[in-house]
Amino acid sequence: MPEQVKINHEEVLFKESFKGIKNDIRLTLVVLTACLLLALASRFIFGASIDNVAFLILVGWILFYISHWFSVKHQKNNKQLHNFHFKNNFIDLVFLTVIIHYLGSVEWIGAIFYLCILSWASSVLTKGKVLILCVACVFFYTELATLEYFGVIPHREVFSVSQGAYQDPAFILIQIAALIIAFFFIIENYGTLSDNLKQNQQKLVAAQGEIEESKNVLEIKIQARTKELQELTKRQEEIIKERTGEIQEKLEEMERFHGLAVGRELKMIELKKEIKKLEEKLK
Image (tube, rainbow, N blue to C red; front, side, top):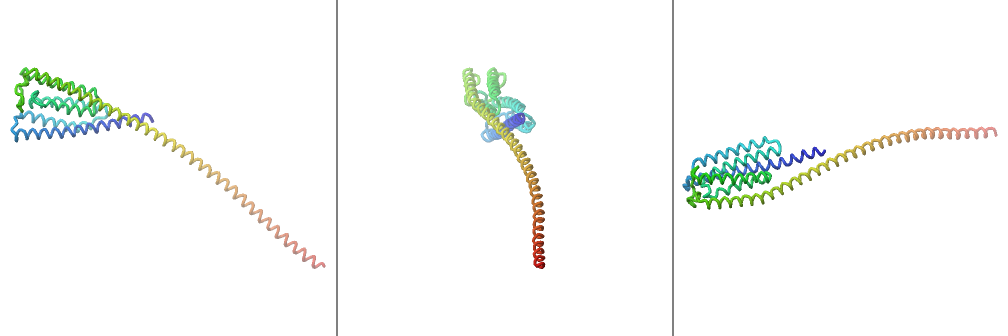
């Protein structure tokens, strides 16, 4: 019985995680599609200088998530599911870093979108894995800023908000430091809340398992008691049938005795009548 409850416990947690990841994939597909449409509108309606590579990356990212939608169904347990989602979130960070590069890098607010991946990951993954993703965000963003600063890769401008800021060390350091503080502050609080919710979920599932176990034990006891009552009823029916047979035999015996007694009395009455008639004749 305890083993069965354990299996049910794991199945419930797996279903909850699977549901959360499916919602994450669905929401990400909606957001990516909206971003692609917004980028198309920005370029062809408002004349924004968005590189063609950015569109290809967005399309590739959408296709990647469509494959993610079908691949997630092949995960068999909670551990495989979380590892699969963690790897895909890591790939998301790579896609997003490239998109940020084509949208102006440190001169624009693209780094904020890292928070979307981190917050969605926090709803499913453990706090430790989300912190790893957070460190990866800081590393990718710092690497991007460093490569543009030293001219290893060209700087892309879409919105000329602060031209040349990508080569200002103070601006880069302040922005990276602010992002680090924001990332870890949000992940620490959101991750703690998410962990608490997961712990409460596990407690609820465990309580549900205990209730199921108690229910099964109660059903077994009820079945055993019902069987005892059925056997007792059967024995009582047999006893009643046996006693009824004995009473029936006694009744039949009494009826026979009554018949004999009544017949004897009738004969005695007839004999008395005959004796009286004889006495009268003799007189």
